[in-house]
Image (cartoon, rainbow, N blue to C red; front, top):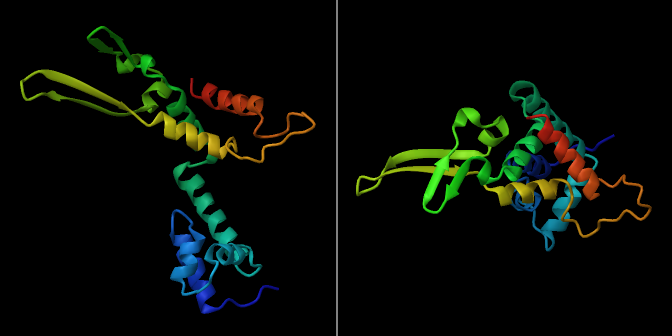
Length: 184
C-alpha cells in the first residue's frame, strides 16, 4: 500500500507534470526540497512507490487524450520526423547556375510537402520578385529520430547477433522504411 504523500511530494508531482521538459531536478528544487544531490534525489522521488504510480497514471492519461482527441501517436510523430529528415531539397527545387526553379506543389508527394516549413513570395527593395522556400531542420529531425531509436547510446550491445536489438541498423532502417512507405 502506497504511503500518503507529503505536501512537498504533492507539489513536486504537480510541478514535474506541468513542465513539458519533465525536469525532475527543477521540480525538486521548486517544491522546496534541499539537497546536495538534487539530481539523484529527484530521480529517487520519481521511482518512489507512492509517487511513480501517480506520475505514470497522469502520463498515460495525457497520452490517451493526445491519441484519441488529436491523433497524436508515437508512430505519427516518428513518421513526420522521417519525412523531414529524408526529404532532400532537390525533390522540391532544381537549380542550375543562377537559376532556381521550384517544382509545382501539385506534383509533390505528401512527404515532400510535409518537409516544407515556409513558402514566402515578395519583392526586394529594388522591386525584384523573389520566392523563399524553407525546410524544417533536417539535422534536428535526424538527431531526434536517432535519439528515439537509441542510436547515440554508448551502451549498444548485441553479442549474439540475433538482430533483436532495436538499435541494430537493419532494424532501424526497416522501421524507417515502413514509416515512409505508409506516406507514399
